[in-house]
Amino acid sequence: GGARADGMAPGGPIDVHNKVADSMAQVALIPASQIGSDGVPAFNALSKAVLHASMSQQAPLEDVLGDLEPKGRVVTFLGLLHDERRIYRKQIAAVIRILVQVEPWKSAVVSDAAFCSKLPEDLQEVLGVKEPSNKQLPADAP
Image 1 (cartoon, rainbow, N blue to C red):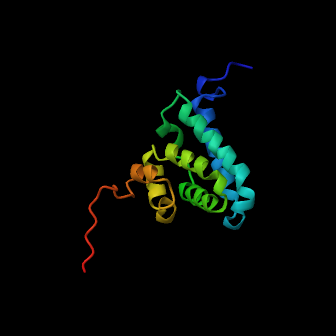
Image 2: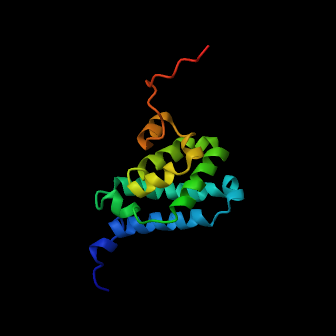
């Protein structure tokens, strides 16, 4: 057996990419109605893979996450899990925080307005969906 090419080595960019891709494929298979019950193991795998990608110095996040699909399904999944499993909210926000550093993912998250509105305020500001709190509200007309 010859030596494996660098990119294929465990922990290499291709390996990281594949792990995230696999976890997203798992997520996409779970019907919306079962996310609260069956979604946690898939979320744990996704969370681990995304965190790993964010810490990997081997490839820019854009390269690892940019072309992965199905973005819409993954965002919907995270939104539903966020609703159903309160104890995972911090972890879900942490995953979103990493994903949205990549432009196509940011667009996918922003397009789910209902989910955006439930995210922590600082994350809403990163996404540009929250008005800065120092904005003057119009005074109520008498």
